[in-house]
Length: 407
Ligand SMILES: [Zn+2]
Image 1 (tube, rainbow, N blue to C red):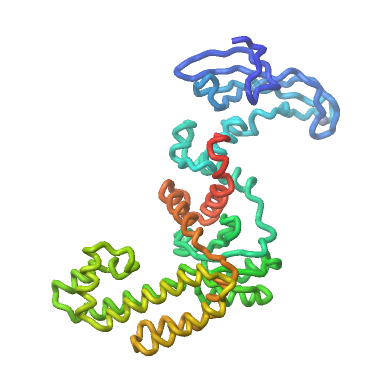
Image 2: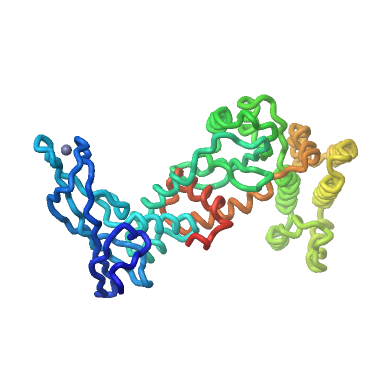
């Protein structure tokens, strides 16, 4: 190759020699001699003290792993009283590093773009620990701490299992449907302090029906509008039905008890979506128990109310509410304790449940975010540390749309 050719990252260097050996591309470089100010006394100097070879791993050149041999010059100050020795300045490699800045940058970018630490380590021929360190450095610089939250936020928990805490809290933007921040646990005080510091402009919060989140939000913010998440309140009716099924099947003989347990999913489905065989099983077990039949019908009733409420939306809130009161009456008339308990919870959250139709907001998209977090955790060790998982998840979502373009 021509030695006056410039290579990426080596623009300010002279290439003195290139050579291929043992599968590596070796490039020998040095900087032009300069007049430099002494870092101690600012006296200009061009007196060379000596040269040292620094061996540096660099990005692939011509698709070969590449090693740079940098003949690094040391200058000495002209001033007789000073005589300080110092390295010439360069933008290729930091002091005491064995990898070029470009190489480290490339590793860092690859760790952001969904590759595992182990794969990246193999590809670049460095240790996974080095890769992790690169990730820590680059992710900290890319992720500026959230200063102000948008006016609408959602709060949910997920099982992240980091730093000895099973559950973490995720704060998301329900309009953009992307994560904003992740908190180390789901305790009231953690959420309270975070909101106190960041959420002065928040007026609507979407959340599951957790009393500790509600207390944190109520105390940290000035009476925001709270929206109960749909998925979470519908789930109470499914849980109630499941409890009734377990109670009732307990009275069945061995065969039917096991079979009924295996048919759990049939009870959970909407009746309109059952196959002929599933419908047969549903009737078979409901015929054995009036309570089970009533419980199934209550669940179906609630789901019908829910679908209708979503359809009607904010224009028909009074109809939605009247229909919900009818449902409460029917539950009371049925005297099934599991359902009576469930509507007790619904009544405690009545205003927040109605808000979910009034504002048409929900947390449904968070499940998708949490599934991607699970994949990230499965892919690599190193994410047992909370700060690292937090940065990985937030950057994954921030950069996923340009994935591949920067690789
Ligand atoms: Zn000096």
